[in-house]
Image (cartoon, rainbow, N blue to C red; front, side, top):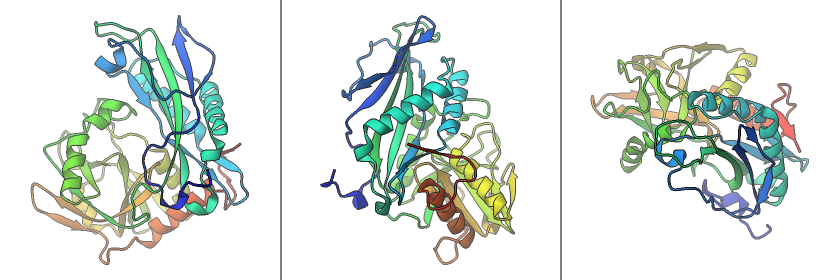
Length: 338
């Protein structure tokens, strides 16, 4: 892969050598298969196509200064996938099967893990879909679990820099007791209209308020929201928010930095009083927020007065990345080394 410009990778799909697959039928998971084909051949009446039986995950592998490959929080992603499986009536992928397949697909595509100094990583996408043909609304009887990988650069071209966000009150991402807390495809489809409108208007992402009262912040596009104020790390608590593994990790690091962590409903009117704010997730780790505009009311909430990331989010960002790349000791047991 010496011809690849690792330092200028975007966040998109690049073909790699292998993906791995496993089928579920007759009540049991089969053998793991190595595959070079990028395509999936499924029936036109498969439940994933008609009734949304699909769940997925996103995690990354990093090459350290020592040349070793580190996969970040593999077990936590397995557990979140299991929660999604429970939520939309699919058979659980065991942590053992998940671990074996992730390690295998990364190992098979080792030459696509970007070098340490590039700032890029190998994105890992596990996907579980219902594949049995049926026209009645009921859970599938057969499933396909696929994991593919692709090298990626920063989610935002500018990297760790402040971005502006917008609120669209006329679009909801998820209902309070719906599927918002599961990582399923429908949640992302429901956000595409708002996301597209935000980008057209020059914003990095959209912010969703709670669907019931439109008073509280739920999520930032496909990422969790975090705020910093008076040595407190504040993040929304809601039944419609996807539990972010990145956010969970940052909360632990924040505690160790001496911050008080608060998971609670976050009123929109609080935001302008925050010292710092950001969106966090696997893709960008942390994307600091400079300003939030309310498209309906015209109100503006300025967070970063000088347009630069604040000191706390900067420390959290570099602290997490240091663990991912093996620059500091992994005292939490988050990293799996190949």
